[in-house]
Length: 165
Image (cartoon, rainbow, N blue to C red; front, side, top):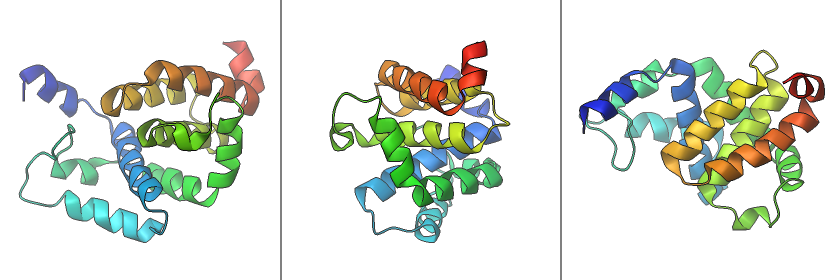
């Protein structure tokens, strides 16, 4: 791992790490909808307590799950799982194809961002969008798509805040 990558990983905030783990959990759930919150959390915790090695394919290390904001992790993951139909309807309004044709990573990012816009008014909408774009860049390639969709969602879910720009 390059020094730049190592420094970037060290700079992840507890809230960003929570969103990363929500993304990983939602990806798991979208691939296997029989999973529940407890199973997803146990799976993530188990993955991240092995021998201190970085997980293949991402910039996550075992200690990162412990550093993540557990309250935000629980709120976002359980919220998306519980309200996924409502979130899906909102997201679908702004996507030009069936959501099943959107990659799991992009769909998970859109669901996290939409639910956070709905349920976390204390987090400014621009922060939600920026964090979602960061997740899309970190794990996928559809960050422009994510930005366009979530900006429209923000105008629906938080019209006064989004209009104030």
